[in-house]
Image (cartoon, rainbow, N blue to C red):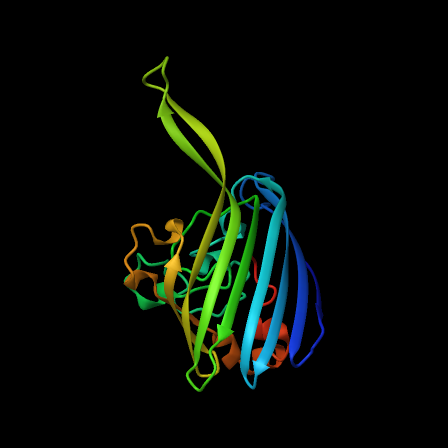
Amino acid sequence: RLEYGLDNGHPINRLAFKMQAEYGVNNKFNPGSSEYIKTWMNLVFKHQYKKKKFFRSELSAGVFLRSKGNFASQKFYSSGAYGSSDYTYSDVLMGRSEQGVSEPNIFGRQILNQGVRSLTFLPSTNKWQVILKNDFDFPGIIPLTFYFDLGLFRNNYVITTASSTQPNQTIFIPVTNIESIYTGGFQISMFKRTIEVFIPVISSDLLSKDVSFLNTIGFKLNINQLNPFQMISNATIYGKTGVGSQP
């Protein structure tokens, strides 16, 4: 993986940029059967409008330059990414194997940095994806933030149908759609953003269809910040805002 980043370090209007490129190939099982090249960028703007109160906006965009075979974890996730999709172990997670709202375990409700801040799982993509995240801290002593996320991605899937000429034969038809999603609501932050709880108020149909309200409430444990070595790294904007995470 190659990385390059810039950070202006401004205390009021902070701007950071990071570009990454990654190449992967399967040389263990059936060598050469899967291979990919992908690149993505993150652009973050952070404005302090009052002491310890911020407006933040992050634009993430990624594209696969080459995609061959099966490599599910390395794809882009627009929503509902779970522990196994964090194949680089960038996030310190509790219950890494728990997956989404279907899990009775509370750790299955953790929200990762990938995609919009939603628990609803959507199919990953090996084409392209753009995510825009925004949040605004409410004034006053209450640690309340309004967030609103947008996503646009190319979705590939296959539908099956019976052959009109051979009834016993199944035909697989590849379908490509460009999907748009959004979600917004209130975020409650505790212990200097070590714990963040997300309560969605509005969501697009893809994220809210057939999902009860309680099953949409998720949280994030920024355990990385409790690691003294990670806290030193987090002195930059990359740690504080998650710059460098995949879109």
